[in-house]
Image 1 (cartoon, protein in one colour):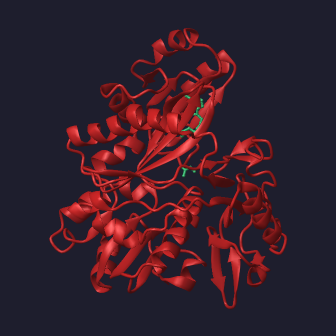
Image 2: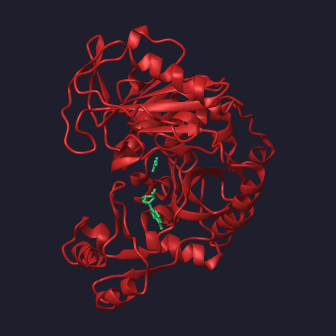
Length: 424
Ligand code: AMP
Ligand code: GLY
């Protein structure tokens, strides 16, 4: 079959790489894709939110399955667009409906959903300009640090964690009244700070049955030892060493099952991934957030460990076959290190030539912000490359990734030298 993957990051390059190994694949298209996907698929120029253009490409290229990488088109309703169009409604689209997309698209919607199904999460209250006069009292009733979250999508930047009470009061006003994050922050959820260690849980579901993909942990901060500004992710590992059987059972019973039950009860159409951002507080799991897509860079360590034919797995969703498929997960440990442009996550330059990619061995190189330029690749984003290795343990996997990274060069290249530091 012909498939189309929407998106342009390391996540999409990793998914397309898995699809190239499928026995069912014919042609793979990426919209818009990146330098890496241009080598193993056909890139189509366009915007992931331009549904009319996507429709044209699906029809012209005889696409049978569309995998939606990023959250924006999901929250904008790409699933509903397909289902309400006669020429698209039978195409398999791996994305949840617009309604289900609100689990990521609105923090308040997600919180209310969790409340309805008793899913453990931080205590919270929602504020808008209409009840902003009550926010000071609410903040005063809480212990620092204060967690302020823009309700809507804010490209990963909408969460502030503030130690000082007065600053928290001021920031709340700046979010709501001065639109610090645009319309995303016209509503703000204030919540209790949870102190623990985070992990990423990925549940594949067609709204009826579900399968738990390998867990992963990402490293979000720019600086070594988890310091400095938040980024899209500087590295990831899978499996998660502190996830033992007992903890997994708690996650499945208290969080995954009630989440899937809630999706069913509310008749949300769901054909894709529920990404549950979890935090382990003491011995108990809490939900930090829902996302309605795969994580990036987690995908770059999760899918390399899944030995099933991924295209067959996605194609089976919504059919009786899905329930019977058993996931076949590699025991190997996977680690990825992200190479970023100098200055990222603040301003950075693009267009730097990347050298050394032909000299690498025993790693998977997933492109994120790259472009093909004649015979080489140049940088085109903040996160540039994900270098993934597999090994019997994290020490071996990471040693290999770092050895290979020594061969790669571009002007301003930066990366964390301590991915997995907390595990070894
Ligand atoms: P979110 O966009 O909701 O995932 O939040 C971004 C990051 O902020 C999370 O990955 C956590 O590191 C942190 N965070 C969010 N909510 C909380 C919370 N209630 N307690 C502690 N840290 C949090
Ligand atoms: N790595 C976190 C995310 O994809 O949102």
